[in-house]
Length: 331
Image (cartoon, rainbow, N blue to C red):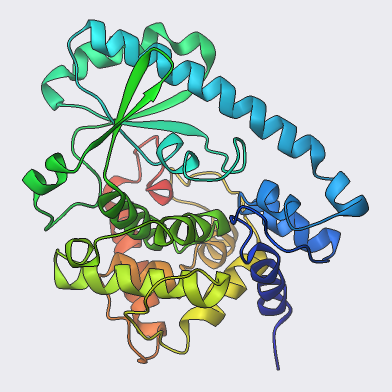
């Protein structure tokens, strides 16, 4: 018997299929499915596949995301100017760097700026960001490129691209390295946001050097291939297939999308028994996240032991750092 969450997730996938293309075909759906797409960050993409009253219901969301895109670009430019004046080289990843690949502004909403700098400039960079706090744009500083374990850093640097943005230049990763980062980041979070898989579909349809793309540690390469195959099988992305999906994987993703986003507060102290049971149930990792966190294996073996092991690891981290005000469950 097909669960209601799985069926709802399949309807979200159908709605988002080919939605990033220049002229996607129209379809029909229900308000409930649209709400699930919105919760996964894909509301503006859903709008492109609809017409009539359902499309009209998303017009305000689309306008908001267009305005937000302009606001983030303005904030990005002001920060880059300040970093340049301070002599700090900046690498931008995710966010604007992937949003620019979509056919229209505002289709790919993002909520922060991810900037990579040399750790030696940390203090100056933090001062610059503090001076820009008035525009309320969250900015995450990184002191190494995320998810690049096992990649050749000299090759990554050689493939950096510079993109004009008004009077500044944005430096970002080459497409292959950016796709690697986006894929591992999305899997590490269980791909609960549907827009993360659309990102992979968008990047997969760019001209890519697959020989270079698949250079890295074996478990990361396997995870990357799995994520790209998901983008093809679930969303209809073009590109060569380099992996077979285990049978549990797509249904697990559909159930995740069908549940939508669940908000909860970080757990920062030992809870009551009732709270512990409730939090434990809600924070049980989906099998995609658990497998990614443990580095695989992406095979047909049952996922329950993998989920349990990932869960126990998180509990152990909570026991060691329960007084951390940021909340161990948020990590």
